Length: 297
Image (cartoon, rainbow, N blue to C red; front, side):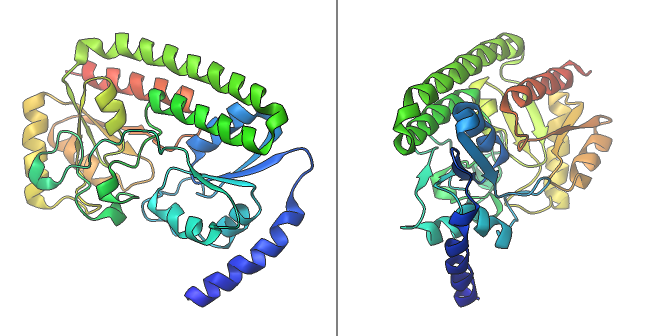
């Protein structure tokens, strides 16, 4: 299998350059939210491709021929070091520049089952969390502050490839950063009355968002596994104690456990999408969904 994978990569490397469009910088990313930031910063100077198919979770996805073709045809591969991206970035080494645009972001920890569950429940099985558990929470794009930092890094990297447009990239990144700060300040005001409140999700993707606004993320899933009866009973007790009436589920995951919890607390299930490309509208959607959940009695 490794031999076939290597041969396929070599073949795609040979044909990738023939697919480039003149005047555009072909950039490949692993996630739709990152692709959106690249498009915002690069404008019509870039052509962005995303490896992860729509509707798929990065936590259980293995890249195939399509993803290899996209990566090999790029002049720049931008990653947040998700586990599924690492298989390709190892192959790209020395062939296509690979940049971890999340390198300057301070990662929050992944908590294990034995350390409480107010923020994360990914456990020590890093394959279920999309990254190395020792490296912290991989969902770095779910914070407007982090997105502003990554936009600046993207502008600098694009500027290395097209120095004649560096000032334009930096200006676009600065404008994007202003939008993120304004959005963040607005969310701070809206969520301030609920500081310290808990919200329940199926998969713990919203840790950075929770930390930013002083909230507590409680996840049903532990280590990428369905909740056992004992675990579900404990979650139900805490949800009832906290007066929670809304459970959030990501559309990339099985909603059965979230629905079971909602039924047990006589509440409802609302959908959140951590992989929505348009980060501006998604941060607003997450904030409004939380406000709706906190307002339920």
